[in-house]
Length: 426
Image (cartoon, rainbow, N blue to C red; front, side, top):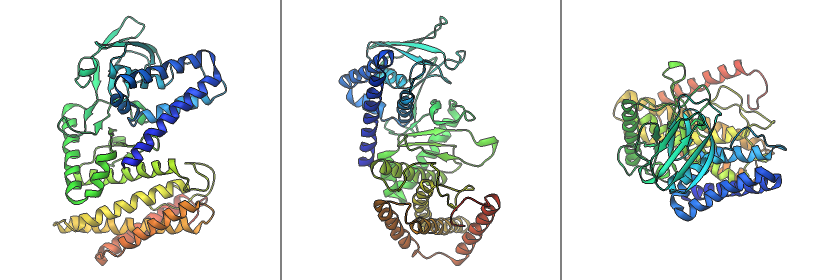
């Protein structure tokens, strides 16, 4: 996990360099603007390298860097306002006390400084161009309408004050390395607007997260160590439509970041964290080596049946799901061994049976398509197969195996009804 974390940080430095080079190809104001932002990050690094590294490594910075590069990759970058890179430079400047002025763009809930928090500007239109002036005594955000919002100096950025929402720890205590990022809109869709957790909800999140990590450290030391090394942020989103159905997700450019609705129980959160960290790990691996013959996420090509989805999936998604659910099955195998309540133990056995068989099925589908994987990819999937074969030797009650099989058959029938064509492996 430390190696992958380092490789993802290196990737971000490469994205910064690629952005600088691409801006240089455009020349003029574009080149001058990006060079200035790059200079701010350089000065911040010289002033406080550890602080600057933390900002650049923050999960939501990844999409900002990619979006900036893609904007510059257009033949004629627009003049709609500051690039997303500006908020990264502003965060680094604020956290290190640089004496600079940086133009920013308003977005709900106001202006986000990734890795630090957000300035709340409820009456400012999204897209409005703002100006941040900062130095070692703090900062001032000017809206252009006469409104000026002060920011605390670097040493006090963790304290909430009128107009300033700092990021808060995901578990109680000052030593937590994982943050609750409930202010950054870059990681949620328009239908899931960012919101500030009220204190009672914050306490519930922290208690659930603390319980999840206690459980993992007690019974899943390997997964707990992965999370300690790699997990950086939990981004809360509301339950969809007021339902009780949970939601979680992660993104390839947000290593260490998990977006999720709050699970009701610590065990469910522990499962979610294990699941999503596998996605972060595999995404980082796939940034280093090609596992697929045609790397990508949603490129045209074959679509496959995935026992955990209602839609046909590209090979990229099938590989990710297989890798994640292999660990989910292992998680429930271990949980079943320690649960004393018969109903809870049966539920754990069913989940283990369901997901170890699902992952085994999709592993075979990937290996059957000989042109889809690179040589390295075939070795990777074959290694997964060996781990799954070992997991399938764990004895499970026949009643749990039957229930898991019924669930799998019902899912495939629903899937076939919904997707009558266009997928491999029916």
